[in-house]
Image: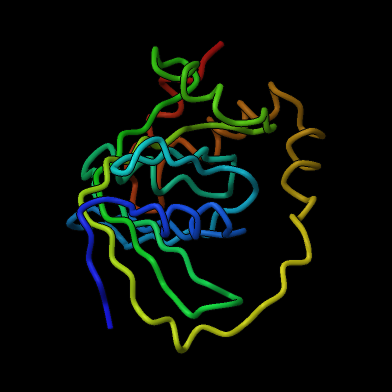
Length: 184
């Protein structure tokens, strides 16, 4: 049975911090819906109605493009062991790039990771849990090494070039803002 909350209760805050993966969903009124898995140590609960997550370089940059037009964002967490539960955080996000004034304060909350390109600061207006009975059990075997190795091999300038070439526009042709904010 689904339960709704106006903020993140302590019980569910502990659940969120124990998860190794979460999913982010965004869309505009006329774009494709994007759902992305996120891992590593890239999420922080700032208070019961606010979270921030560090976005690393990837093959696309849909969330940034969508949030510029429509700030709605949903984060989903699933229990892959223990009590079956699905938890969703609904809210509105703002995207921060390394050149933005608020970047240093939020970036300090995360261990430095190569390829960090944005932080999403999400104001939560609804938390919902549901049963998760259909979610299979999985064992966490560790973080994948490929993203870190790829970004370290490219180097800082190579990553910035990749952002300009591959992350500046969404698959629907929406600008992501990365080319405007990340010039050094």
